[in-house]
Image (cartoon, rainbow, N blue to C red; front, side, top):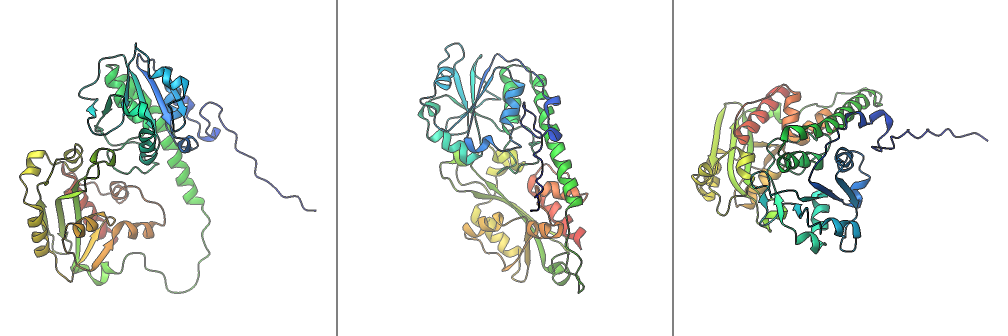
Length: 384
C-alpha cells in the first residue's frame, strides 16, 4: 500500500489567528479609550482571513467583539447598550444620521459598530430593533481606504478598523494618536500583496503551443482607432441604506475621441436632493452641480457628440447602463476596458486608479470624471 503524503497544516498565531508567516501582532498598538467600543460581527465575516474587526479589538482594550445576527436576548450586548455612564450610539448610515466627524456627541459614549459586508450589516440593523432605536451617526471618509486587498462597493467605503480610526480620533479628541491603528492594517495589506506577487511569479503556466499568437490587446485598437471614444459617467448616487430606493441619476458625462482629442464635458443638475457623498466623490461642489443643464439636454448633447460608427470605451458597464436607463442612446460599438485589462494581465484588477498607476499614469485633476477619462485614454494609447 502506498502512503499518501499530506501537507502539514500551517502554524497559526493564537492571538491574531493568522498563519505565523503573515502574523501582524508585532504591529499592534495598545490604545486606551474612554469610549466603550462594541463591535457586532456578522457570523460570515468571522472566518474572513483578512477581516479587521479582530485586529481592532486587539488594539483597543475597551473594545468588545461579539459574533451573531440577533442581539435582543444577548445579555452582554444589552448590558453595554444600557450603560448610563456611556450612552450608546450606532455608527451606521441612514436617514437622520448625523455626521460624527462634524457633530460628535458629548462623551463618553458606547460606540456600536456593525462589522460585515454592507448586505450583512443591513441585515443586522434591520433585524434588531434595539439597534434601530439608537442615535445614528455616519461620516464621509476624508481619505481613500488603504484596505487594498478587499474590494469595496464604492471608493468612499472603508474597513472597520479605518472607521474606528477616524471616529475615535474625534470622540477622544486626539486624531494623531489613533493613526496608530493603521500600522497593523498596513502590515497585513503589504504582506498579503507581497504574497500574491510571489504566487503570481511562481504560478504554473501551460506549456507553449505552436501556432499563431493570441492577440494581447483588443482588435478595435488597430482596426477602429479613429472611432474610439472613451467615456466616463458621474452619478448622484445614494448609498442603499440612506437612499430609500432613490435611483442613481446622471450629473456629469466626460468623453474624448482618442485619435483627435476632441472633448465632451457636460454637467447636469440633479433633479432631486443631492447625496451627501456626491460632491466628495466627483470633486464638484453643489453650486456647480446645481448650475448644470437638465438631464435631457445632457443626453441630447451627448447624442450630437457620438456617432453611430463610434466604439464607446468605458471601465465596466455602469455608465452605459445609466445612460440607457435615462433614455439616452449610445452606439452599438462597445469596449469594456476593465474586461480587456483583465484579459490582458490575466489577473484580478483593483480600481481604475490602481491599474492606471501600474501603467505609470497619474493625471492630476480635482474632478474625478476628467481624471478617470485621462486614465482611460492613456490606457488605450499605452496598449496601442
